[in-house]
Length: 364
Image 1 (cartoon, rainbow, N blue to C red):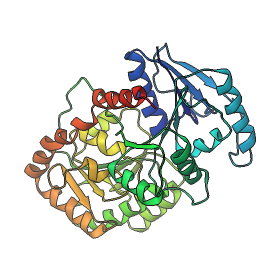
Image 2: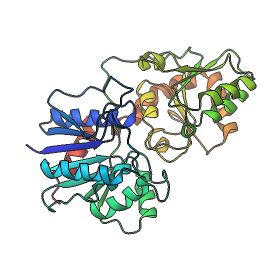
Image 3: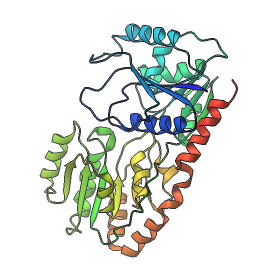
Image 4: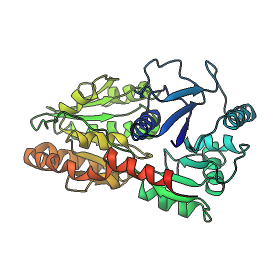
C-alpha cells in the first residue's frame, strides 16, 4: 500500500487549503492509499475540522504555540527534518509554497520519496524575498513535481522561473458532489458574494459597484458573507454612500447552500485568487457569476456570456452595467443558470483524483 503524507500548516483551520486537502485525502484513502496528515501547528480558534475518514492519521509538530515562521525557521526546519527521518512515506505532498523552504534540510534518497509541492495561490502572489517565493524556486529545483491550480498559472511559472527542473502540472481543485438538486431562484432579487473581508477579495470595489446599481435598482439587495479585518473600513464606506439598506455584510453562515439557493447572481470582485473555489461552488448551485478577469481562476471556470461574465480588471462601470443588464433580464439569467453545469465536468472529484493518482504512480 502506498503511503502518502500531506504536510499542511493547520489541518483544523477554516479556509480553502485545509478543505481541499481534506477532500483529496479522503478521496485517495477511499481508493486504497494509506493517508497521513502532518500539521505544522493547530488552530486554537477552531474546534470543527473538515471531515476526515477515520483511517487517516493526524500528527501535529507544534501544539498550542504561536510561531513566527521567519524567526523560528531553524526550529521548524529541524522539527520537520527529525519527523520525516523517523517516518517513512512513499510520497510527501507539501500544501502551500510558504512551507516548502522548511524542507531544505530534509535529506532523501532519490528513488525512495516522491516530493510534490502543491501551490494554493498563484505565482504572482507573495513578496519577492518571502517564504512563498523562495519556496517556488526551491521546489522548481529540488522537488519532483509542482502542482498548480490553473493553466494560467503554469504560464506564470514558466515566465517567472526560466529553468524549472521539476515536472510542472496543473490539477484543478475539485467540486464536491451534492446529492440534492439545487433549483435556481429566478425570481430572487438578491446578489451575493462570499469571502474573507480582506483587501484581496475586493469588497471595496463592491461598494463602488453597489453605488452605481442601487441608484437604478432599489428593489434589490446585495449580501456579502464572511468576516475579516476590513469590516470597519467597509462599514464606514457603505454608510458614507448611503448603502446600508442595500449592501449588507452578513457575517458567517453555517448554511451556504441555503444562501446560494436564495440568490439570483454571484458577484466576485476579487483582486486575485489562487483558484477561486467560491466561483465553482456558485456555479454548482446554478448561479451565474460575474467576475474580474484576475490571476487566477475565473477565465477557466466561467464561459463568458454563456454562464456568466468576465470583466476587464478592474472596470467597475462595466461590471455594474452587466449586473444591471441581468437584473432586467430574467430569461437571460435563467438561460445562464441552465448553462452553469457546462463548466463543471473538468472539476469533478473523480476526474481530479484520477489526475492525482497518475502523478503519485508515475516513476521518478
